[in-house]
Image 1 (cartoon, rainbow, N blue to C red):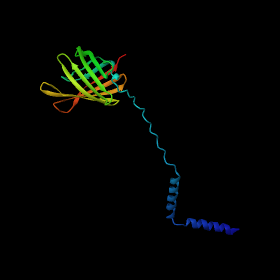
Image 2 (spheres, rainbow, N blue to C red):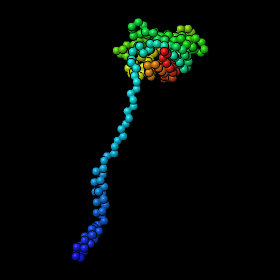
Image 3 (spheres, rainbow, N blue to C red):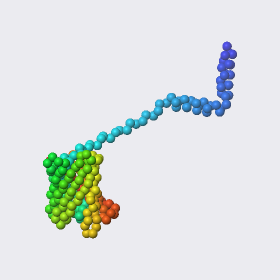
Image 4 (tube, rainbow, N blue to C red):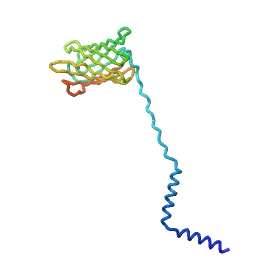
Length: 205
């Protein structure tokens, strides 16, 4: 009866007498095996931002009455300065042209300018002619590209005044069916473009 007990003690002693160097190896093997069985961490699903609303690119977008407010510098012949009023666009028959008239105020005095705008739906190109009667009489011809539903990029033909050549860049940011913003920059004699002003249009009922 004592032999089995003695045999068990001998096995235990032999096991404890194994070199200590084998213990880290077995531990590493166990960690590797456990890591292989562990599930990979779950990746968080990225929330997709809702798509931005886009308006239909037609000349009809501009038809109607718009409350107009512009804040900017006074740089004739490109701009007479900050002004506000109502811009009304009427469609010319069934064509892709509209005629616009701005009735407002500039430096506390009545102000008026007219615009003619044409749109080519095949190339998404806009052509705008702006006329400012009075002492600041000038005409600006701009070509715009409406390739993106969210913005229209314009550049005017050069205008000469006072022995200098002026050019205007304009970006119309289309924010909704009832609002858009205009940002303008200008260059003198081919120099770098600088900020001129910013306008906001809100459609009236």
